[in-house]
Amino acid sequence: MKLAKVFKENKQFTLFSILALLVVGVAVFAPQIAPYDPLDAVMLESLQAPSSAHPFGTDKLGRDLLSRVIFGTRTSLVMTLCLVAVIFVIGTFLGIIAGYFGGIVDGVIMRIADMMISFPGLVLAIAIAGMLGPNLVNAVISIAAVSWTKYARLARSMVLRVKKNLYIEAAVVNGTRTWKILLVHVLPNMVTQMVVTAAADIGTMMLELASLSFLGFGATPEWGLMLNEGRTYMAKAPWLMIYPGIAIVICVVIFNMLGDSIRDVLDPRQE
Image 1: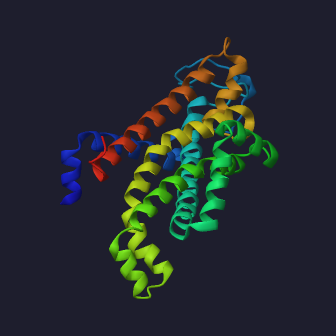
Image 2: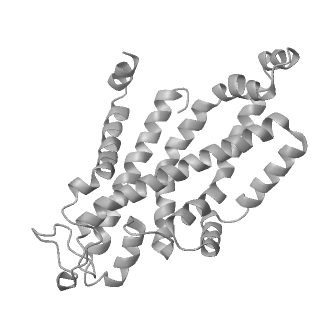
Image 3: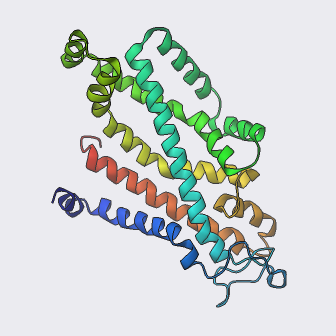
């Protein structure tokens, strides 16, 4: 009943939840939806314009672009969610440790965070990806290495505020184990804000991954890499960049708006 009330009272949340589920559905059922194998090259059909047989046209190897865009949804969405989960867990964990224990632990973690922030994020991610090698897993690792600081600083500030509450002091006096204090008393008081932040970051992280893929650090089929492959043929076959670009814009808008809606639902005090 409460969930039904949330959907009824928050039309924006309902709309973008449905759209996000449609995107997830496309990713899950990509093999059933795609009309062709996205890796099936037919050189005789290279660079064909959009037609009834190939609604989005074909690429330089004669692969159906619609099928590649559909399968790209699976690749982009899965890797984006993995990236958000990684930076959420690592950043929140380090922020909790820094905020609760303080002292040298806090100093070391925050100085590392400050050092990472001092570099342009995407430039540093490109450097790390270049050292690790060009594949999508390394792209995720590279972006995670420069993106966890936001979560760590936010988690630390919230822990410092929660630590001042009397029930934390009472738990310490009663001899409650540290891990239990963190799990039972600290984490529940900050997880909502952290989840809201993670949800709002899905669209941004998708763009970051597409950017690295565009520079050649992705995997096929993935939208950013498809844009990179299509830029050479921009004048001759503009559909190679138009349709993957539209897919990126649609997904980023959907998940950005969904993140804002989740923020409004979970933390209505924020404007």
